Length: 243
Image 1 (cartoon, helix red, strand yellow):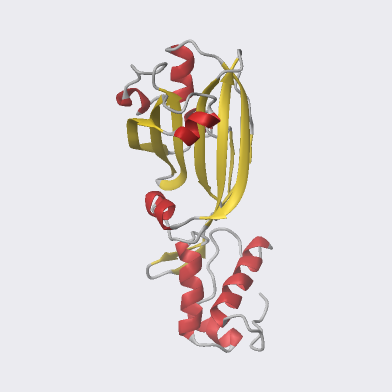
Image 2: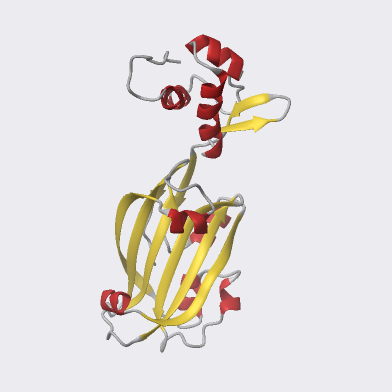
């Protein structure tokens, strides 16, 4: 592990945090391996234990490290690989990988939204069905998504149907609509207070923001979804396949 530079303008705790992260990524410490004690790190870098604790606390909060009472601090399995089709088949992909996943429905209501209607090529006064869900993997928030559907087309969709079923599977089986094209935009951002609160994470974490429309064979826009993905301790790739 690199020695921190006391002549640097960067705070000592920040330097230590970054040096530990570099060591983890270089696999100087393996997953499950015990990290040197805070006292040892303090002596090694010639800094206070309070400074070491602050750096370690941040890494624990972000799931890079895990504390075990009476045993010490260990390297967590922080870089999890997920190959998923964004916003489309979350449930199926999680089941394929035998991962413990769940969803919380945060909103299910009829709305009017001129901006979203325009994105869906609908009239401004069109009634929409808004569905907001928090997706969790291994009981940890991973994805916050908000989907809009034309209310007239899906007015008999029930909230209960979504608890254990994929929305896109419902669209296909119940409404006989085959989605065969998706367009998406993605950007990196820092989660603000509102999003952080919903995702049950600390404000200021780095994340990814997606906007996506899905179309049927007639090129009609069937749904619009916006989504926030955690990106602080996940490594994943995206696959698009609607057929």
